[in-house]
Image (cartoon, rainbow, N blue to C red; front, side, top):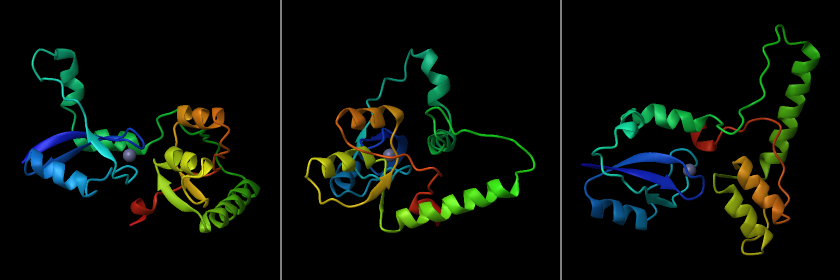
Amino acid sequence: MIVFDLICRAGGHEFEGWFGSSDDFEHQQAAGLVDCPVCGSSSVYKAVMAPNVGIKSNQRTSSRPASSKQAEHLHPAEGGQAMTKAVPIPPEYQELVDKLAKAQAKILEQSQWVGGDFPEQARAIHYGEKKAAPIHGTATVDEVAELEDEGIDVMPLPLPVTPPKAQN
Ligand SMILES: [Zn+2]
C-alpha cells in the first residue's frame, strides 16, 4: 500500500488516499474513482510531495492524523460562522429560523448540490457551457469575489446546507 496526499481541483481540499501502487492511483483517477471526501469532486491531483528529510518545521503538521486534517476541512475556515450564545432563544427567533429553513429547503428542492465544484459550475452556466439549472454548493470568500468580478450572480444561503453524502 502507498499513501498519496491528494488535492481536489474544485475546492482545494487536501486528503489522503491509499493505493496498491502508483499505477493503481493513475488508473483509478483516470476512471474518476478517486473523489474528494469533502466535496465529492472526482477532479483530484497528487500534491507535490516535499522530501521528508531536513524539514523540521514541517514535521509537526505532516504527522497529524488524517482524521483531524479532514475534520478541519468540514468546518468553514473562512471567517467562520456567526455565532451567539444567547440563552434562552426567544420563541419568535426559533420560529423565524424554522420559517427560513423551510423556505431554503423549498429553494433547494429543484437545485442540485455540486459541493466545491460550485464556482466552476456557476461559471460554466454563466458562459453557456452548461445548461442553465439551479445549483448550490460551497465557495470560498475569494471564489465568490472572483465570480462577482466576472458578473456572475451568486447568493449566499442563510442557513448551512448538509452535503447529501454526509446525511447517510
Ligand atoms: Zn473537495
